[in-house]
Image 1 (cartoon, rainbow, N blue to C red):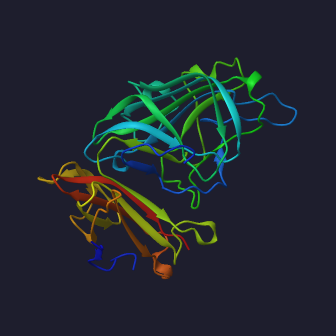
Image 2 (image 1 turned 135 degrees about the vertical axis):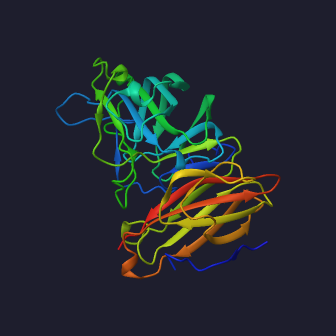
Image 3 (image 1 turned 120 degrees about the vertical axis):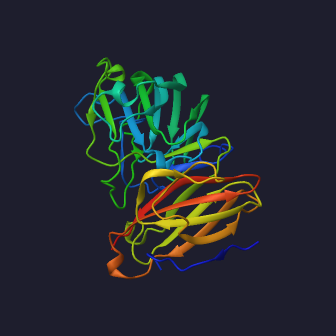
Length: 334
């Protein structure tokens, strides 16, 4: 069945076989390849200086509304490089944890008081070879995410310098526009032997978060993309695509608002939290296709007063049950 638009917008006229299940992309489901950082998974080599990030402990905070509204089993993550190269890690560990903070502090324990080890490897070599592909890390121990909770992604790395000949390798960070409204990452990094991988505290980064996909076993999700005319996403005249991931044949409904509710709402019989301010400000209805996705695209009107508008979107799927997805957002650019 072909999706049908209900209302005009009131405010806006992998490197490996993909993992099964649905995913969210934080904060956008698009790879740009022109801005990155080395702290989480990369390496830093500056001419005439010793390698400066062979050890690191890093954290990134994802707020509850960007995660499945009904909770979910997280089965893996995906990231993508910016500067390419091959790295051998003596130690590479990924932890997740529910977080009590709304913005990261400089204390790893305060941000992530009950971390769960979900991925661990020794002497693993990764060829970070493409800026247009997501590199998957399937978890050895899936993480049960509790709806309504903020989530911390934590990475510890120690690079095997004897087996790593690449120079600087970095990973893509959110860009175009720079999102100063998003929680900033935090990390400690240093040369081999510095102990940075086990540091109790770190420094807050002045830039945006790393692009990351979270993979789930089943819950419905929503992702957002935009064509980047002029290198900037969500510009006037750009095409925005919202894609619901659910079960084939399910009905899906997209909603829109310009803000989040102060307190997320439960609206029986719909499962999960509704994060937007207005109730059912509908913009689109469709049916999830045979591939498990329901896309909807629209063009941002070429209307300068829209610049700066912060739009939020959340969807639901209706089949055997009715369930809210996560929310996604966009800030209109000139």
